[in-house]
Length: 399
Image (tube, rainbow, N blue to C red; front, side):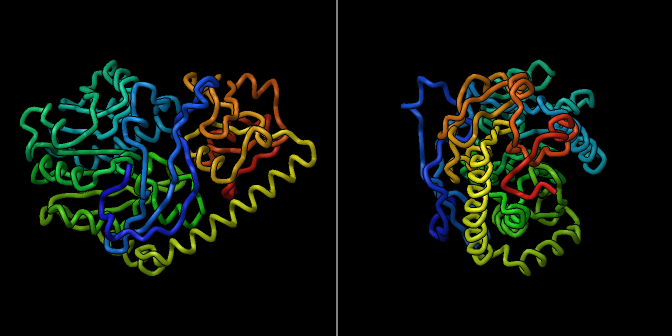
């Protein structure tokens, strides 16, 4: 599926090769049915927007078999508690209605169910949407758009807070999204969302942020330019540590809010480092190619010593690393994970077996490739025993 937003202005600059569905953990008898697409990226200099050129249809990625549950991570539960607390402290005056786009299992919205509000979540994956409903949330099992929003009575200019976390980058039709947001927001309403930050990705060379679900990797420059096209203004930005480096964006109606000085400061910073133009992308491409070369060299060196390597955490991000760097089961013996829906299956594309954590503890490797590097503190605390005798590696700096 081609990405149609601003396609006339996109400058392609890199291909990561053939990629499967990032969260498409697969059974052995389905190997021959696996879907692949060429994962190319480009940059729209008019909007300063980094994006995939093509992507699978959303229904292929978000469905009743979606294997990610926010509530499975203690870190993310605490993270969303803090996020909700911040929203309440800053924007809760006279708030009556709140919507979360991509509400998953309700981990974030459950923090608002006792606040005498109308709480709505839009979640296209039925399995996690059903869990959300058990928490007292009005979970609408649909993609958020101008048609599905009509399931909420009197929604026009009547929603006080719209939130999202690592979701807006998943939505192909940005124009449709922002038009719907503009229709929904009350006069003083705000649209608050967090997304992986382009500046962090380029600095860390964390190219695993790029996969089928992440159609866009946003910068402050991009959000500032896009929002102005729809009668909205970027009024605040706050850097976050989640997902290896994210940005929290706050948007409101044009002329209805004071713009925090953080916005202008970040825009100037991005311009200084060329984040608003394609020059940064050209440098990023070179850094990705060097990272791939160095990673393969390191892993081959480990295997030449007859040491075993396992992958730790069967993340969607790992799909990009394994397929871009051509790392298969001849180099990575297995991947351990806690998610029941993944265990017993194989990694997308490279078909490395997924094992449970008991297997990891009974068959500890010499080296563990930390795919969930953005949760390293939580994992290192949990795996102190392995850390004493084994080695952790990643494609990014773990220090």
